[in-house]
Length: 191
Image 1 (cartoon, rainbow, N blue to C red):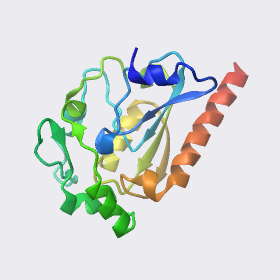
Image 2: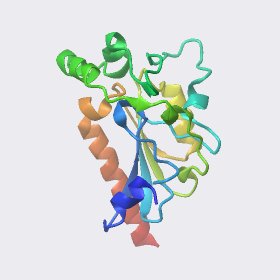
Image 3: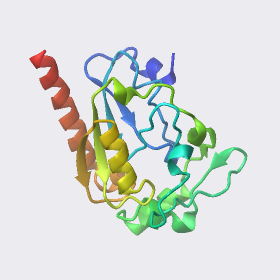
């Protein structure tokens, strides 16, 4: 059983699998959590939504010439960090400077394997999904977000903000989660 499965096993009610990029210590769960039978839907917060056989590496390897490039530093003992001097501009452009500096200084390392893990069965192929597309994201460019969310058939909400939208606009994140929950309740009542 996946770590996420262990966490949700005792829970009752509507369970969504959060989908966030592997940065800042986040986890990438589409295989192990999204396909769990207790999960009724996926909520992507400016995140990668890979298809079968894809990884974050494969999705970021050939960016368009005008796309921003994440300031990922070379690995240190198998872990990655973002360049602190470029952190605010690339990750938290709409966050107060002191908070963005704190976020840069307190980064949780993320494993190199988070980028290389290929998806065996994307959960979005069998579960409804919602996607918060962040229009000023410099980590996952909006065109890439549009492509992945459209391919997944996600209900999309666009909002201005940085990759750290959950810090700068928690109201937008909460509103999308609420919309997803209401959508599941309505679909369940109709069936």
